[in-house]
Length: 333
Image (cartoon, rainbow, N blue to C red; front, top):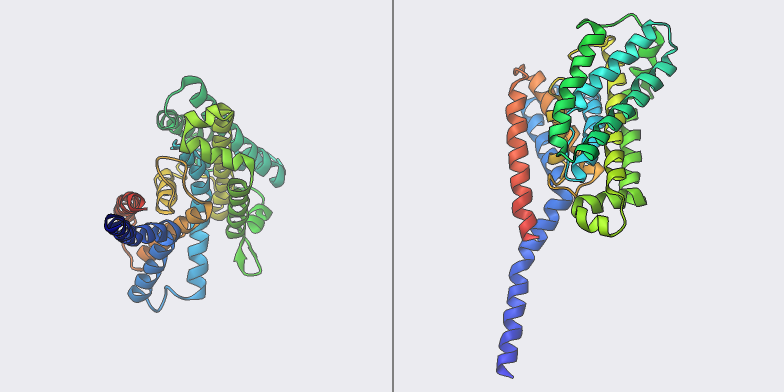
């Protein structure tokens, strides 16, 4: 009887000793990214109290974050299956360039957006997914190569020159405002909302999570691995295409070097947003918050007249710190 009581106390003590770690791990998984954003907002408010918290500047933060949120949402799905897409920046440039050239050639803006932005983006995603399935190479290798190919195609079809002179209505609509909110922000919210529903409440989303968690188990469960791999790269391509169209509308021109380095920021947004780099875990809502963190950092550096390349140092430190914290708290959980 005494031994059983002692054992019960020991078990209770062991459970109690695990509760703080469990609670901390659960708290980090649910609110870690939001805590980073709130802390960052507080710091920026102290650094620039006169400019940062103004309405116009906060809207500007949302505008700056919109394209990154779109790219990050696409990358999120490829990371969810324990893959990656390094070609999102190049796809942004290529889809934006083709859309601009179609309009300059006389194509109606709405048709140019559909053909050059959405459909071309989907096609580029199909190419990425097809190559991953056929070669059985890691997506890192495939998308690294396609990043260079898509960038080269952009330079070739544009002769390494900017393209401009498309209808004014195109920019007025896609770079305008609705009830005071920039259209790119509304588009990013709509896309993120749809992808959140897709990932969280559909069979396709559950299968993608299962594939990222354990590909072999997913295969034994009857999940078509190649089809779902193709789908996630199509999603990434479409998101990049929409981001390319919005970038052209905002800047008023299609630049052959647009989106250079954006793949790093998109991946950072997803990872900082709580997406596991090993697949199977993450949420679109967290990715949106991660994109906002990128936008806030960029904005405060501009306000303080700090060179933009310091942003890369901050991004690298955030990625390492976030993944390290995720690993530590994930073990405790």
